[in-house]
Picture (cartoon, rainbow, N blue to C red):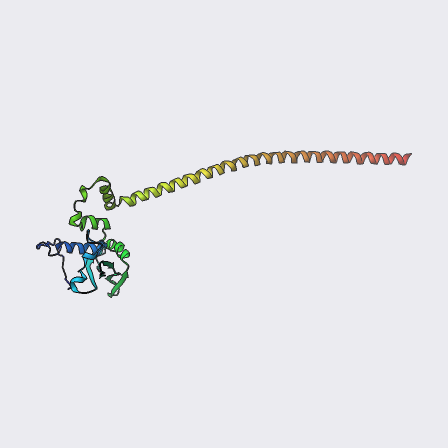
Length: 245
C-alpha cells in the first residue's frame, strides 16, 4: 500500500515502537536521493517485501520524493525496484527512474526518464548537497553511525569524500602532470632554440664570407677589366706598328 509522509520545517520527529519502520523511512530517503541501499540487506532483497510472503514470484516497489531544488522549484524524483523470487534465491533489480518538474515558462509538467546512475548523479546536484554528505552525514544509517571511530585509512577516505578533497587531489595531480609536460616541452624548445641560434651564428658567418667573396670577385672583375683594356691598347699599338712597317 502507498504511504505518504510529509516533513515539516524546520524539524520532523519520528517516534514509534521498535520494528515499526522508523529506520526504513531514513533508508527510503537515502535511496531516493543517492540510490544507495541500506547496509546488510542482501544487495536489496530485504529492502522490498518478500515475494514469498505474498505468494508471488516478484514484487515491485517505488519511492517518490518531492523536494525543492537550489532554484526553489518543486521537483519529484521517483525510483522503482523489483525483487524476483527464484527457486532458492531472490534477485533485486533497480528500474529506471524519473524526475518530474514544472516548466516555469509554460507551467506544464515535464517528466524526464533517467537511468539509475544518472539519477544518483543528478539528484544531489539539484539538492545542492554532495552525495557523500547525503550518504554519510544527513542520512547516515544507524549501523554506520560509528564511522568516525574507524581506522585511520577508512576515516581519511570518508573525510576526503565528504570534503571533496579527492577531486582536489586529482586536480593537483593533473596540474602537476600538465606542469611536467610543459616543462618537458620548454626543455625541448630551448634545445631547439639553441640549435637555431647555432645555425643563425653559422649563417651569419657564411653571409660575411659570402660578402667577402663578392668583394673579392668584384675586385678581380675590375682587374680583369683593366687587363682587358691594356691588352686592347697593346693590340691597337701592335696593329699600328705593323701598318707602319
